[in-house]
Image 1 (cartoon, one colour):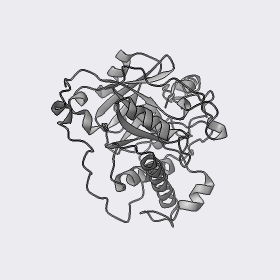
Image 2 (cartoon, rainbow, N blue to C red):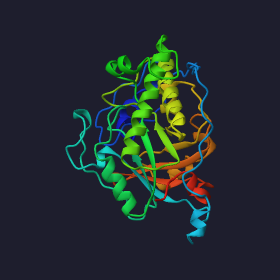
Image 3 (spheres, one colour):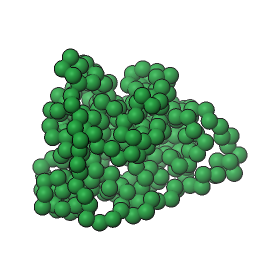
Image 4 (cartoon, rainbow, N blue to C red):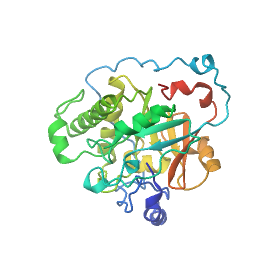
Length: 315
């Protein structure tokens, strides 16, 4: 879940009015041109669902559990990692996203956020089960994330009428397909025994599976994805940067927690992303991420370490 590989492309766009913040998935050497209109975020109206959402679910673990078990709790940043298909044994996955056996979490990592997709939606992480098992054996806490993507035509045809939105409209069909994208990921997660109080929605350019040039259409997909996870009983958050989010979905505001990327920088820079200057879509900062030695590293933002059970599951 990286964004550094498209630095050159996004930097060239600065002169034209677009942000220089880049993004790409792990191991993706080439990035697509950002969607048309990214240089001027617009107000986005997403389709209204035809059913009311369920009440927010409870967390999967008692917030006092760490204290009961004698684990010292303070407000210092807590180190963790995120992994996905690039860390699978080499050669696994779809042709566009073959795994390469990337390094796993550092030994000091207390939690791991595991990716559910093999790049775009409707393509599962090919070694999700083993990554969940490894995290569990190591005694680390766990959470989940999934890349959001614009649906391929075959998936739009299959799922456009299946969901809580009016599939007779173009935006409703896109939102329904996003909704089913989320439920597909939930099925993958539950089959692997991955328990989590939250699912992070990764919104950024997806090499080889580009978003459309219509920010409103992209926003409908993301809104459907968000609703799908919530209807399945999960809290949601978003992973991105302000520029990448605006470049994909314009001014869409979900107001949910945020996991903020800093690229190949440092732990200090990752922590700085917890500040108000890096708000993505109106939510609280939970994690800051940076890349070091080919690993995605993460630190909790201020206040988060006092209640890790609200964000991660401990088996």
